[in-house]
Image (cartoon, rainbow, N blue to C red; front, side, top):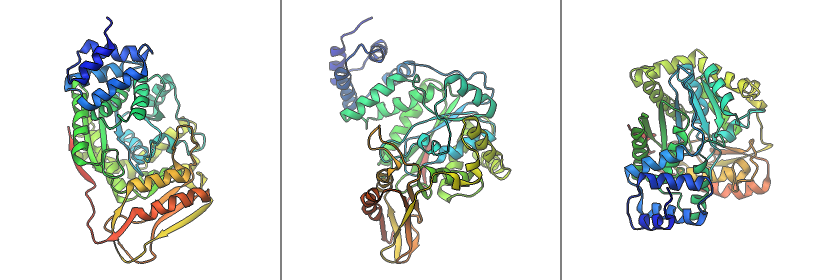
Amino acid sequence: MAFSFRRLIERKRDGEILRDEEIRWIIGEYSRGALPDYQMSALLMAIFKEGLDQAELAVWTDAMLHSGDVLDFSHVAAPKIDKHSTGGVGDKVSIALGPMAAACGVAVPMMSGRGLGHTGGTVDKLESIPGFRTELDPSEFGVILERIGMVLAGQSETLVPADRRIYALRDATGTVPSIPLIASSIMSKKLAEGLDALVLDVKVGRGAFMKDLDRARLLAETMVGIGRSVGTPVVAVLTDMNQPLGRAVGNANEIVEAIEVLKGGGPPDLVEVCYRLTEEMLVLGGIEADRPAARRRLQEAISSGAAFEKLEQVVEAQDGDPRVLHDPSLLPRAGHEEVVTAPRDGYVARIDAFDIGTAALRLGGGRERKEDAIDPAVGLSVEVKVGDRVETGQPLAVVAWNNGGKLADSLPMITAAFEISDQLGTPLVYGELR
């Protein structure tokens, strides 16, 4: 059945509801190149202005999901649960969380992305491990998942191709900050993994895409609702991203910090977020009845070395060099360091995660353009947290750099990210939605 795309644009522009068959036709035709970008851009702007109701959004997401491959891991007996973060600074949670969950009996088919703007990407971090392959075909992905219980890979080119095309248009037409379009983009990709359940880490604050708690909560509610509409349990946890998570911001240095967590160390805020999200995975998978029991099991997986061993197994299976897990000095290291110090005595009132993330990007740790190469060795170590007492000259951050020009471009932003005064910190976890 064919429709008038112009008429559909006009109807959505005027706030009308699109029918199921119309939405499926739009996604199908655009995926096969039969609809022009300029008209799809107009429709996306209409959706940005008028939104999609719950029924429209469910069909839009389902049509996106089925625009390409849908993975089938029914041969894997364990509950298949993934975690997705909406993006932050210093967010290396997936690299520790996956092994923790897998060591406790959850199968984790984790498909992650690359850095986007000021936020880091799990795939970029993993590729700082020498030899590590993040591109796996579906059959190899399934074999590793069944054998080890987890995979750490990039998104397949054949998974939800409609989203790849539509996101590129959103990025170019100012329609990225649309909650229905964000929610459908995330959920279509995750549901295409053939999951039994999903945990979402919805970041809130200066370093997140959702700066405002009310909008973050609305995004979380929207994604939980999509999961409910297709019978997939989803839990969304809202966590703080006003300051970087943990100490390390970069690529190779974030791998080191994730290893610390799996060995029973790591910064308290990073450890808490890792446990909080993984507890939800164990409860959703029926491994434990409640979060306190799940935490005890996770603590045992850490103390016994089982979680660290899972990371070793995955690195070996994906052709990475497992020696780096025992000797992090084998990871890429920058040639120079610069220390940023406190200008006066006082309390750390603010560490602007957006500025820190942007500075790491400018050092070479991220991409300003898609074709930019990443330097895995550069980054920052943030030595303080909001609420800490500091004295004049005390280190606030240590900057690892290779290019003097990029350092000069980054330092003013790093210095400005820290505010010293009297102020209490913000909460780490704001709540959850089911």
